[in-house]
Image (tube, rainbow, N blue to C red; front, side, top):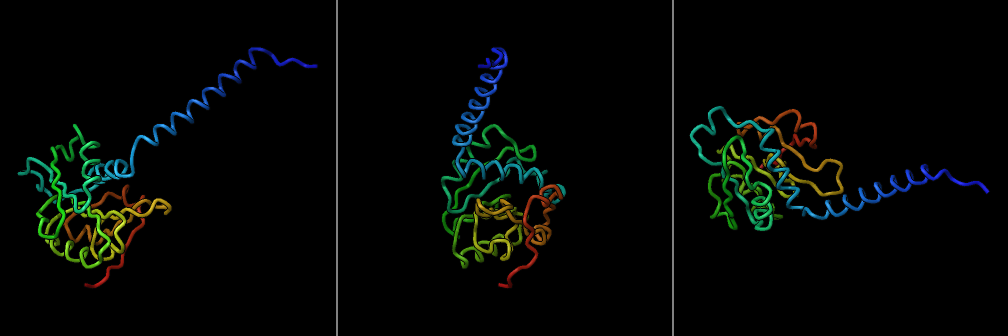
Length: 189
């Protein structure tokens, strides 16, 4: 009968413990953040990779983030952005539940499944340099939205209509574009 070297066995036990600890910590960590927390972090990072027109933020004290029909996302955004600045500015969230509630903002997160509502909302803010972000909204980018989250199972977590961004005087970094599925065609509405 052959005996295993005791220091070798101890090393294996330590490595096994570290692996089990790392896996369990990762599971707990991944359960700590909701889907909306993760999307809020994406929104924060999207803003870092987008340039608004020159002098756009010069006269603004705060960045307005609109949240259309998604209170839980707005709450996640408040948690994730606490003590953070966007483009060296403080931010404020405005909750909007109807088309009549929609007011000018710098970024708007849109949660609707209605094609008609999507079209009307995008038309309402069409003349502004507003970064529009859809929450898995059907054909969002084809109707003129700029960024749209996709389902979890897709290879790319979001899609971008760069033509729409350019139309709204927003310049998206090539670093962000390489991470997205690019939408080039638009529906006429």
